[in-house]
Image 1 (tube, rainbow, N blue to C red):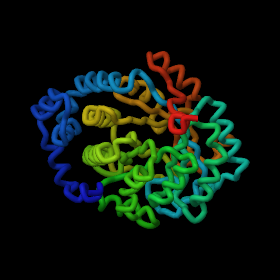
Image 2 (image 1 turned 45 degrees about the vertical axis):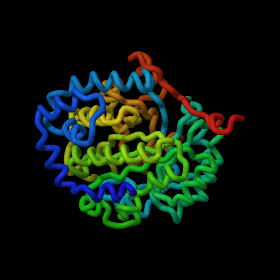
Image 3 (image 1 turned 90 degrees about the vertical axis):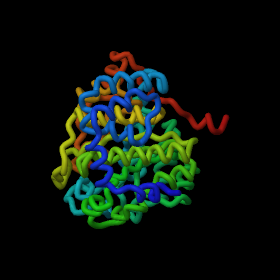
Amino acid sequence: MSFEQVLDQYKFNDIKDFIFSRTAADVEFALGKEKIDEEDFAALLSPAAVNYIEEMAQKAYRITVQRFGKTIKIYAPMYLSNECANSCKYCGFNRHNEIPRVILTDDQIKLETDIIHNMGIRHILLVTGESPVKVGTDYLINAVNLMKDKFSSVCIEVYPMSVEDYSLMYEHGVDGLTMFQETYNREKYADVHPAGKKRDFAWRLGGPERGAQAGFRTIGLGALMGLEEFRTDQFFLGLHANYLMKNFWKTHISISFPRIRKASGNFKAYEIVDDLGYVQMLLAHRLFQHDLGINVSTRESAEFRDRLLRLGVTHMSAGSKTEPGGYAKEHDGKQFQVEDTRTVEEFCDMVRMNGYDPVLKDWDTYFLNGE
């Protein structure tokens, strides 16, 4: 059974009503269990759980230290292109936005690679807009070949591919995939994706499964908070992660919590998710899945990210630029505005000051090849 078939067994509004009907007793029952189920997860996502944040935080901290130690994996995104064939209302890369469109040349890729490598980063996430015609698999493979000797882990966040194309990327050195569903509500998904291949809800939903089938070591998921009622979207994000962890146990699954930020097009969020709501979602996921990777990017402010260190986070980006070529020279072709503008060195210093170890490298292909 695919995750789409699992998802079809639920109705978005029914789950929303169920979450909002949870009581303090339901929350206390969930917190009293070592391993929680879907109903308990819904209770921890509910408004009723807001009064139990401290208890949730203490439990999440213990679980995270037990599973991951006091470590934070550091990575950086590298944008190869902002060309896009989609019309996503919330995205700065929307094809209708008047921004400088850039596809990095080989020389520009090498320059960006050198800059990021010199910052100490060894885990990189390659990002593009979704334009398979202009930035296809051949371009991506060439980019990976130009840089893979500088990084121990190369992940991609690009358009959804077939199992065959993902396998090709894996063969050329890509070991991870990030793909956000944005929202799990089909109706809202259609509204915010009015045109372009990304409008195909099912094709995107199946992307992480196809990536796992192709052999990727890591898969990252996420729902863009602000597109739909966030507690309900987070419930389905949890189900999605749970499905992948059970069916592809060799692949490490992580999730992100992106909130809508300022970008070209000036999209207005349908719902504002405050910091307390963000923290509650993070804690609920940690209590639901003890081995889940939890990622917080530079979309969030420095002050807020500092406070999240002890709440279950395992992955954080640093020194990020969200436009192609932005490490060498910033320009207006950003996907979104970065909030935490600290350098990698400044960020790592903060992590150490809080008693955690910033991990700039925790993987090498040697582990696979034995060479």
